[in-house]
Image (cartoon, rainbow, N blue to C red; front, side, top):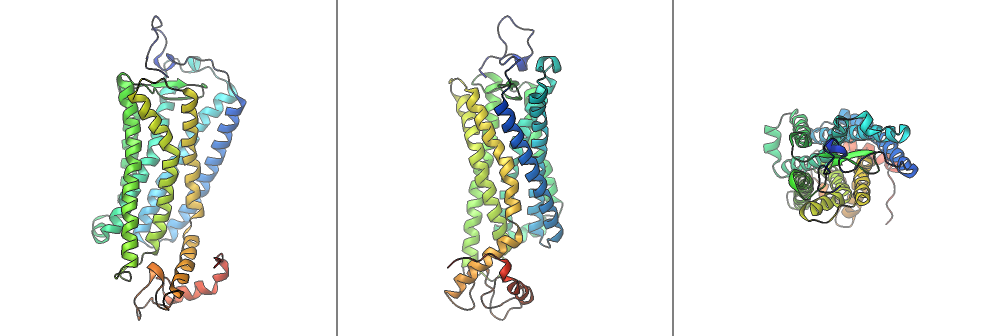
Length: 368
């Protein structure tokens, strides 16, 4: 993975094999890691799809349906990314096919590289889009509800997919290039500090890091707004329990994406701006770390189900309410004498809270 695009005197070598030429030695350890990552990720995302489908059928809130649509797009992208790339990698380790015989014109390698870029950037871009949606929903709720139809979330997911797909096609137009990478099981962009490879390396890392930065800034502002509104004088004007639940999930998505992707993105950025040689083993390690994002993401949806998060919030709020007064319950209080007000209760109706209170044993006890 260096700056050269074609060795001197070997013009017949296809571009994708001009730096790293097969055959490679296959490693049983690499095969085991790939198999574990792929099977665990596919299973987790399938479970998450079922959980999200059931949650979408039960929801009655437009803001929550928007959020679940984004989550559905994110988990679908993660599933397809693992399915496409994992199938090729495992096939290589099982059959040991020769890339140059199977793909003499680099079409298959280019497809693999495009898939890596597309399925890598989509989760980061979708995380930024979700942060924008939550920022508008929390800070401009009335403008949002009046101007955004129910299909807007689907259109935004499609826009993200189109944008990521357009970026992945740039190497085919001459901006950058895809190359076979050690240990011979995958193709990716040529990380280089020269020519079009430098431009695309900078573009890939800049888009990924910018998406993470947007998520960080907007989510921080949204959390600050929620804390100010929920704990201020107007805390009883709107229900905030759903919004807190969505922000908890979104913050976890942001943290996992940052931890998994920042090492690879910053390494690509640094390599494209300096003349330091690229370490293939380090790139492979960072790529496997980034793959963990697709495995960990679905467990956020599986573990942070509405009932579990709401149960935890109720218990935490009611403990805070007992330490202050009988009619105050953290950020979920409603004005006295309103239809949904109950001493020490979250912002739910009396009937719903009564039935939930009788099922209190189903909620895990929180030690004092």
